[in-house]
Length: 446
Ligand code: UD1
Image (cartoon, rainbow, N blue to C red; front, side):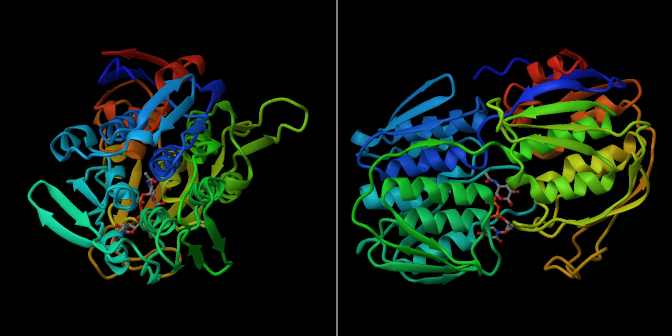
C-alpha cells in the first residue's frame, strides 16, 4: 500500500457521523498468512484489509518462496517453492513487525531451521519472547542468539509435549499451535489464550487437517498430523478497529455504523460501552444486509464514569483501552482503568493531559484484583476525571492504538491539532483517512 502523508492537521469539534466498513482482523490475518506455510497446497484468505502489516508478511512469505497474490481483499498463497531462507534480506523486510517469531514452527517443519531477525512491534512495555522460545525448546528446538537475530533448528524435528504458560499470551499460544500441528505426537497447552482471533486461527488449522481440541479451562490439545493442506477462509472482522470507531462516536458525540462488526467477539466491549452511556444497535445480517453495529452517543451527550480492568479474553481487551480512555475524558465523574496485560500502556495519557484531560496514573492496582504489575513500579492504573474540554495540540504518535486514540482526541477537541507519525496507524487501520472523510471529519494531510 502507498502511505500518503506522515503528518495530519485535524480541525476538531465536528461529530463523526456515517458508515465505515471494517474488514479482517489485523491480529488474525498475518497469523493466517503464516499458517499458509504449513500447507502442501495453496491457501486463500478473504476479507484481507489493506494494512502495512499484511504487506510486511507478504514480503516475508515471498522471501521464503511462497507465491503471494492479492486482489481486492483476497490473498492467495502458494507455498509450493518454499526451499530457502534469506536471513540478510529478512532483516530488512521484517521492519518493525513481530510476526517473524511465529514463522519458527512452520519453517522448522518445512526447512529444518528458522532465522528470526530482531523483533519490533509497538513499543508497549518490553514485549519479550521468552514464552515463545521456552515452548519451542520444550518441543525439541535449539535456539542460538546472534547479533542479527535468532537461529533456530530442531535436529530431531519438533515433538509434542506438555507446555504451561505462566500468562495466557496470545503470541505464545499461536506459536504453540503453529508448531504443534505438524509435530510428532500430542501437545497439551495449559493456560492458553482464547481470544477470538486465536479461535479463528484454530478454525483455519482445522480446515487444513489439524486435530485441535479446545477445553473449557484454557487447555488446548493438539494431536500432530503428518501433513496439512491449504485453506480457504474468510477472516473474522477486526473487533479492535470496530471498537475504536465506537469510541470515536462517543468522544465526538457522533453516530457511526461499523459495517462488518459482529456482536459476539465484542460482547465485553458492548457491556462497557452501554455502562458508559453509549447506545448501540446490532444488525446481525438476518435480513440479507451486511452485518453491522451502529454506535452512537446519547442525546445530550452525557456519559458515565466507569471502572474497568483490561484482561485476556473473555475480559476487556487491552487494545480497547486506549480509545475508550479518550471517551472517558468526556464522562461525568471519576473513571478507573487498571491495565493488567501490558505494564506500560498508559503512557499516551500524558499527551491527553496536554490537551486538557485530567488523568493521573498510579503504580498501584486500582479498582479490581491485584495483577502481576502491582508492587513493580509500573504506572499501570489510571484515574480519569471528567468531563474535560479537550483543546488542540501538537502530538507525536507513540504506537498503533495510542495513535488512533490521539486522532480521536484531536477530533473531539476544540481547535486544531497536528499529529506526526501516521505510519504507525497505517499498520493496523485500513484506509483510515478515507473513512474519516466519509464521517465528515475535518483534516488536512501535511
Ligand atoms: C497480541 C496482539 C496485541 C494485543 C495482545 C494482547 C497481535 C499482532 N497483537 O500481542 O494487539 O494487545 O495480543 O491481547 O496479535 N509476554 C511475555 N513473554 C512472552 C510473550 C508475552 O512476558 O514471550 C507478556 C507480554 O509482555 C505482555 C503479555 O505477555 O505483558 C501479553 O502479551 P501477548 O498476549 O503475547 O501479546 P502479543 O501476542 O504480542
